[in-house]
Each structure stands twice: as C-alpha cells, then as structure tokens.
Image (cartoon, rainbow, N blue to C red):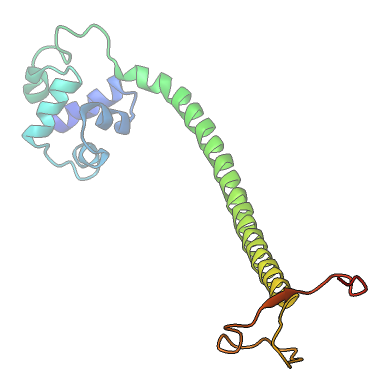
Length: 178
C-alpha cells in the first residue's frame, strides 16, 4: 500500500470522504490533498506529512510504512466527523448573517440617497439665506438716503461725494412730518 492510498484511507474513514475538511484540519490547501489522492497521484512533501501526523493524530509509522495503528495512541475518537455535523450549523449562521448584511447594505444605500437629498436641500437653503441677506442689506442701504445740498439723486453717491454729507433715515410714513 502506498502513501497515496493511506491518504485516501484517512479521508474516507476519518473525514467521510470530505477532502476539504481534511485539508482544513491539517492546515494545507485542498489542492495539495487533491494532488496526492486525485488523478495526479503526486508524492506529498515532508512538510505535508508532518502536518498530517501533527494535526490529524495519525501515526507516523502507519503513514510512512503502513505499520501499526492508523491513529496515534492518545486519540480515542476521530475529531473531523464533528466538523461535518457542525457544517450545517455554520452554514445556517453564515446564511443568516449574509441576509442581515444584505439588508443593512440596502438600508445604507437608501440612507446615502437621503443624505444626498438633504445635502441638496441644505445647499438650496443656504442660497436662500444668502439671497435674503442680500435683500435685507439692499433694503437697509436703500432706506438711507444722503442729504447732499442741492442733490435730488436717486442713485447712491460714491464715498468721495458723501464724505461730509449727513444721512437721514427715510420715513416709513411720508405724511408724518417733524
């Protein structure tokens, strides 16, 4: 019996044929396992053999030479079968979390749209405030007229023209005289 055949026995007996679970348990990629037990039937490296013995509780004597028991003495029951029992639990949890994340991403997308609308509204309100301030300033400017002697101007004088001119506030009600 070859090492490749012993690999196959480990996978069938301890991992119920699940090569991926075996690869995960011994900390190698599934491709490495497939290269040994698949069509290629390559020879595993020393590092891979060492990882199998250390992480899957396989006897070095049995794996290298086929002598003795497949499992090391200290292991009483193979652990990888537990992975298969838990796979459905993990898969269920994964699917639940995936759906929750999907719903959250949709909410984030909607909120992003709302934020953009609020930014646009905020910009419009800022423009309205600026326009109102300009109107208010214009009204304040127009409510004061320069009292320049002999001038009935409707336009505002320049700074040079009004340097010494007194200002009087326009009255709201022209019928009220002082």
